[in-house]
Image 1: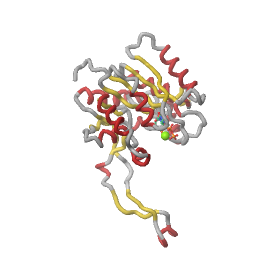
Image 2 (image 1 turned 60 degrees about the horizontal axis):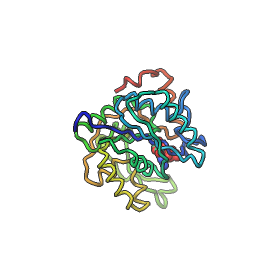
Image 3 (image 1 turned 90 degrees about the vertical axis):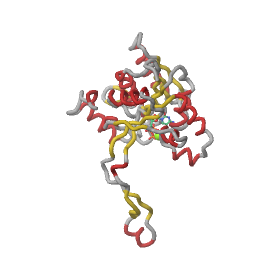
Image 4 (image 1 turned 30 degrees about the horizontal axis):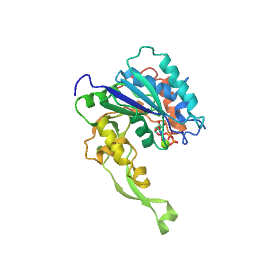
Length: 261
Ligand code: CTP
Ligand code: MG
């Protein structure tokens, strides 16, 4: 791996944000004064790792993608002479489809980071740790944090048990062995492309069980390296997450996120 090796960043913003429930794409929802997508783009650029940025947006046919396209155009216009390119693709029906579509327009890069716009406050250090691991030779690298909750396996209760409570505990998983996985996830572009090529042959049930890109590479026997993520990298899924993110942005911790490791 040479220091010249170029890196692309896919920013996924083509989801509809059903669980957030604002009736507009999640990436368009304001966090503080700015759309979530704009925060995500600012984070990518502040990290200084990207040569090419590709943003997956909802279809403009449905009217949904137009405002987000404007966010991207404005961001580009604000950075004349930037050392990175910024382009847009139409996303697909699933997150994985959106990744696959974005990969079709990335060609002159050796590595790619796949990042959820729904994680708008990822510290620059996390991007850099992932990029560093790729430069050091990893073909797949994910940021993750320890799990703080005790995790139990359950199954549905039956008969008399079901009348008391809906589920029964069947087992425990040692917490020290678990990690909560975040984005950006980093890959060799060739390895990620090959993995997505394979994924085209999965049936719907198998495809639904693949919830991140790293799983696709694991199934091809490629080692997935783990670097430290951050609690600032929270994913905005429901309204509670938006309140937490507002707190990180404007509350007592405001301004500290870039310095957080
Ligand atoms: N995403 C995407 N294309 C899709 C689905 C999701 O690019 N077809 C992106 C989302 O925009 C988000 C990330 O993948 O940045 C993680 O997805 P999620 O948190 O599930 O977002 P949404 O799918 O928008 O939310 P919901 O599932 O609640 O509708
Ligand atoms: Mg979703």
